[in-house]
Image 1: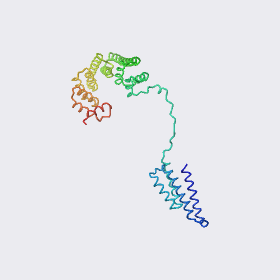
Image 2: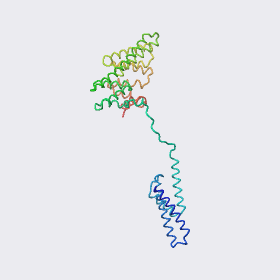
Image 3: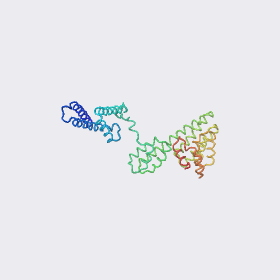
Length: 330
């Protein structure tokens, strides 16, 4: 508003100055009257322009104001017109550069199914569950969110909650663990039936391979503990070896044998199996972490660093990359 009033006043005073200049013969001191009106108009024009200069990204207000006052004062009419034209062109160009077509939109209504989902993420569930000061209803919501978390991550958290003070949390954690275990056991029983009804080497090899994987899942998800874990490792090793007898070129089966042997504590044969998997063509990023684990168990830290070095720049699993970078030479 100030810029508008100052600009209109400057325009009127400049017009008055030009009119006084044309009627100088009727005035007692025409030059003084003209200069008073002209200089006042120049000052008002400079003030009006300064109010618009921030939009034009001016850096020095005092110097810009002095420059515009000087141009308008020492170049009557043309200086005034040039400043006005420059300001108009500047604002016009700035308006052209601004993005067009932007609109303010209202947020869409949330899907009711999305509202029912838990708001917890995998990285935040652990902190909620282990914090006894968090209200039980919130911890229950976090616990329910674990059903969408991989078993390897969820099972240790669920086992920790079996000793929690809240009975609701204990019962829910036990039920979730039991359901995971029953699901795998049902799959094992169904695969055993397929194995019993298999009549050709290909079907036998597939059934043994699936059984080895299912028994390993019991170990990997920490659903089998104590003697059950030993039984699962022995059964997984047996089926992996049976599948290898039918498919000697199966690189993944050598890896499965090594995992089961490592779970049984047989590190020597596990290393032989891992090397066989690597020789059979299994990628290094699947074998080297297991060989590095064996080297760590032997306290051969130089071998650990050597085995993990090729994985420091691997962009696959973030966890493996972080471990490899930790062991890389500083």
